[in-house]
Image (cartoon, rainbow, N blue to C red):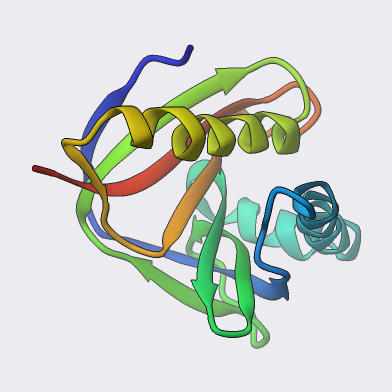
Length: 159
């Protein structure tokens, strides 16, 4: 089991690109994962993601999944000085976050494992934690999506 760490993080402004995917359920989680990977793949192939990373302030690739009425908005971006006409900005508030880390293997598989672990094991067994918002942050720390070091950051309130 991953060590439970709670960190306070300052506000963070990300620049990037979003798409909408179906809301993940136990039945469709694999298909949703494929769609998330495809979004990143398209940005990588077009050179858009590398352009964002060229101006990155922290050299971390971010993805943010936000629940909404149309499904899951999936944002891929960076904390970057690079701005292109077709990008959008996403401001993540200062907050306390549960931070889970994993390493070794494809980033998408690690993120999916950490998401299942948080919502399936950690949250139900830690009544002092309240999932505070409707988003989760995926952070690729080492820039290598095939042999990755990742963090999953989930906003929480501690009772």
